[in-house]
Length: 396
Ligand SMILES: [Zn+2]
Ligand SMILES: [Zn+2]
Image (tube, rainbow, N blue to C red; front, side, top):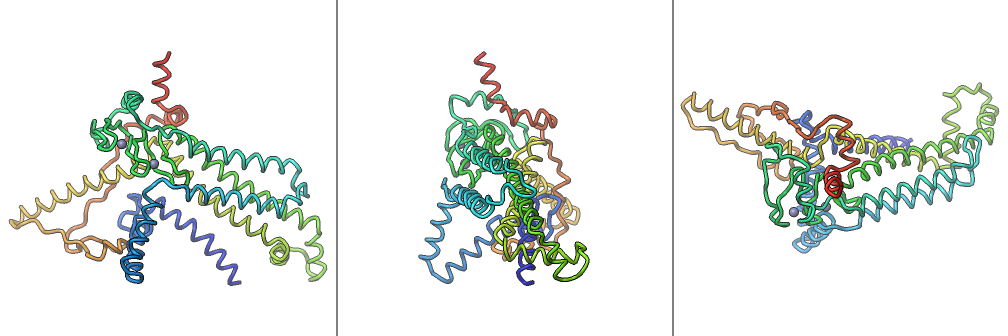
């Protein structure tokens, strides 16, 4: 029973954490516990806490080694997560093949699934290779003009032509210098550790295909295992045996705990693999849905972050102006905005001064995304990047 509860909590906790990761930072959750949790877990709060703990336990040497490991894992290109992905995919594939292929063909599963499964894994691997090793849209002196003419500066999050201090080239609108790969990338979305590559104008199509394909792959694996297990229950006449043994009519409520027990006793690997694949499918589906939404409204992860910074900056300006005007009317100096000293490390705590009036909501400062040209044009832009279209026209 404890194991069952652990399994349920595990399956519930992972999607919750994903929700906090993807949505905790949205303006809708501004000032809520979810936003503070997002900052603590995913924006460095818990890392700072871990650093201090290691420093306390192991002294300066411990902190130094911890920093160099963190530097290699977080700030430099490295294949650690790529290898982890390959071991997960390979491990799951080998586990399914060695434990379950002998049940194909089965009562509910035709022989074709042997080949469909292999084909689906190969397609998944190819999409991984494409996303990891193709050009994300690196900007250099040769393609700079094509990238500059691809998107106009919007005057808000992209104010105008500025030079990248590292690459010494003009930064086109929607591009960003990736500090991990040390290069400027067009229509930069984010640096993906799993792919050890930036996700930008030219490989976001592969990245999205990779996500969607892996959601389908996990669901396919889970349903295939489910069908195999149901086939075994049918083939071995388990329900009839249980009904005979317990002498009760075979209603679903009475029979299913015994069937589950039987499956866990004889097919535990398949049951656990099925749950694992379903949990991964839910997590990936959340992530894929977020990226599909980004593409449909023609924005990027980087721009979502930039818009939020822009809104915060606008809100801060409006707030300071409001405090100044209030103080002017009352004939006193503007108040000093004190911060909670604890919120640096424990940034899930509120940093606001409770004696001051509340700040304006970020949502009052509208985002005007000039790049959104309608769902179909936005989708077409991801499949056929604008800078490639322009170069193709030039060649003609
Ligand atoms: Zn650069
Ligand atoms: Zn990068």
